[in-house]
Length: 126
Image 1 (tube, one colour):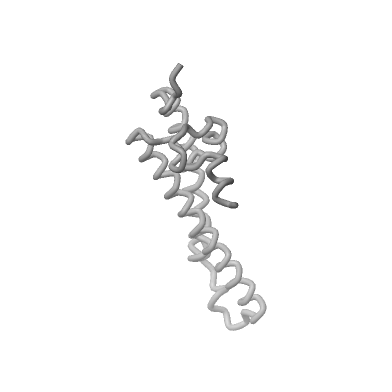
Image 2: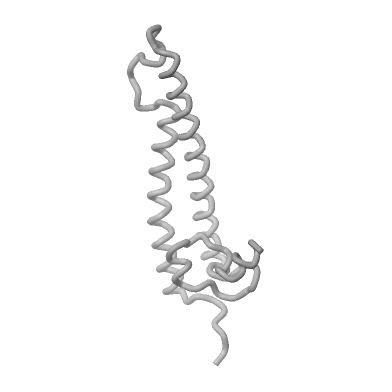
């Protein structure tokens, strides 16, 4: 029996559904982080009030910086998921870019944007 080199159309549709679900959640989280950075949901005068304390300003700045970092990380995750959708379209989804073998379904269900098998990933760390 020959070794399977690609996932079937039905399997790819399962992965597409998983990716689209994760993509929707990731976009919502990104918007939440972006709103925290830009203070989009604030209609008050807290940040222009003359009584605003220095320590509170520092905490607010740190919070916005953290939200900014989280937003950047979330955007990278969104781009990875979008790239996985492209790989589904061009027929390369689920193929390890190091070994050329299929990445196990269990790994793709857990990390749908994976491009390396566990073996390839662990050999890179050594």
